[in-house]
Image 1 (cartoon, rainbow, N blue to C red):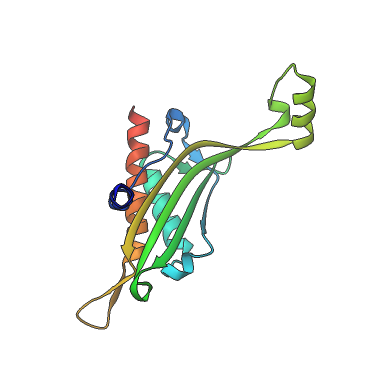
Image 2 (cartoon, one colour):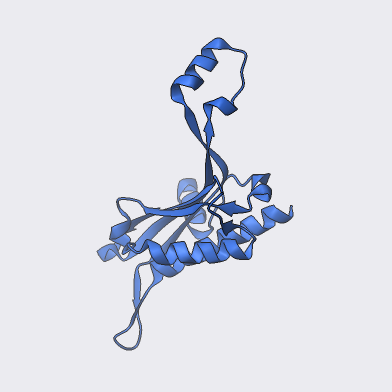
Length: 173
């Protein structure tokens, strides 16, 4: 019974993951990369452009703008899995990461074994800031006429808004 209650609470409230203070220093990004999980199509998620544009708009309002000279990439991963009767609902996960590459010549160490390993690898991907959310939403609701609303898309946009609000809080704090 406790597992059912915990699962239900997790589905009701989106949860934010690690959101450290490094966001204060992030003022720009070179590119936004949006990608879908392999199962996202089961939730009718297939248009990265609307999510890229929405995220870019939200970040710009926070003073985080696209800059060609930036070494930071904003990566938005969106996962979806349909379930339930006639696959009418979707479990959604979104993860926003600001990532950069740290080259081996920028790493100092006195340990020769570590130095050899670092030199062999050459570069490392480093996450400067990360936030993720989980939610459940109905796939589609039909209106009174021939129109239909894709609620999954609306929920992902809402999740991007929530992440932007958390970033704003991190920039203040």
